[in-house]
Length: 345
Image (tube, rainbow, N blue to C red; front, side):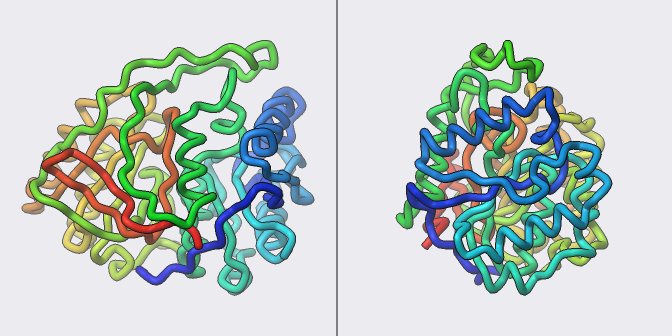
């Protein structure tokens, strides 16, 4: 679907809703400080007024037991005309349980910015089915609450993507990265994670240029959604750039291989123009994933399709924002990636 509705850009002073659509940790006493830290930065860095919905801070147990209340918060955030954007607090594992309670017309008739990643893939595909372009990008508890301050690369890409109606343009790799684990204890709030030099993008295969509309998400979540009403149709994959990344569970290389093989036999690989792949967490299975991708693509005669690896989205920091449906380009000669339109109006 290439005619997704673009939301209106965010502006300082706008009200944004923070929502718990999957994990409910934002409301748990031991990490509530982190939620407040992320919320504060939405104001101090971006000038946004961040607010909770009724069940945002209900806590892990309540959120798990009440997917209908999560969906209610989601629908109410779209319906509230005073709210200009919605940001997921964190991912999780089972936001798919919201599906019976979603009203797609509510989303279609009230387009606004929505952002998150990981299990938020589910909510993105809900928006996609409703006809709205949403943003695969930062969450409150991870990126906005980053220990010792938000990374400037993440801040820059939020501003470029959500606060400007200009063409987003070239997305250069971050010069550094981290996925170091620091326990979410308040005593660590000012302890910055170790940053490592980033080697930049790697072209696994392909020549020339590929252009297509962005679609994708977290690989494991996409697998979990197969057969549901929100899983993209073959037509949705037509002439697209598929973006994929793996979660903190660091699936083995055979999982990547088998998933791509499924994309081959179901016809997805016949429809896409190229793939961009996020840096694996801790760079675990880095070379193994590259080998698995090459093997599976070759099995289906797709060894010339552009595949750009080690991009800064998903489960490492810092990260970019990817607008679903936006026209993008992989330039194999320059090993470069571009988003050729604005993400917002």
